[in-house]
Length: 227
Image (tube, rainbow, N blue to C red):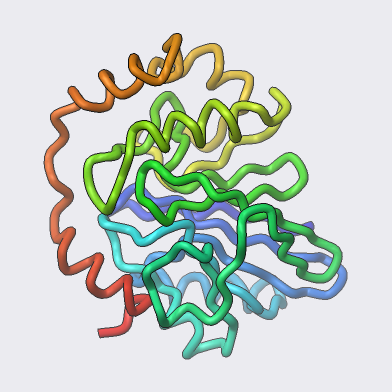
């Protein structure tokens, strides 16, 4: 297997490239439009063919590079079936398996940050989007977000995975590359709650500022980045 983690400095977004070493087919998770040329260069350097591009949800803090990658490589676009983006070609269901050569990735519906949030599990690699972050969790105050749904997604889905599952989030603002489910259960301050009401209380009092250009970004991301 080939695996690369790419960081976008402007939005602190992690983009992931995963490929089968045998068939040279690749997928990219959560691409940022400004970095599409660098992704294509990386694909060329590794002699890979991009076959699918995945967005974990409709992003508010950056514009996806999904459509631009499709135009450049003829790959397919993929999101969870709850996405409001009609332009997506493949919409997967909860627990559906995505196959690329010998690689299998399971889609997991994990709403809360947004109503269309999905995580993706490949063996022991969990790509959690904005649902579970390192030492944090995704905010729940826009795009039909729900702290109650987020609690359910976290405690009844993601945190039920084995403790040694590797966590690769959609963002990190402190230079962390990865974690594990076990570490997050033990150290993540937002997970040290006894029930859903305590979690809702924490999330209701974050007082976070609105992401810059949220309206424009969401509008473009509903079209997969197309102007």
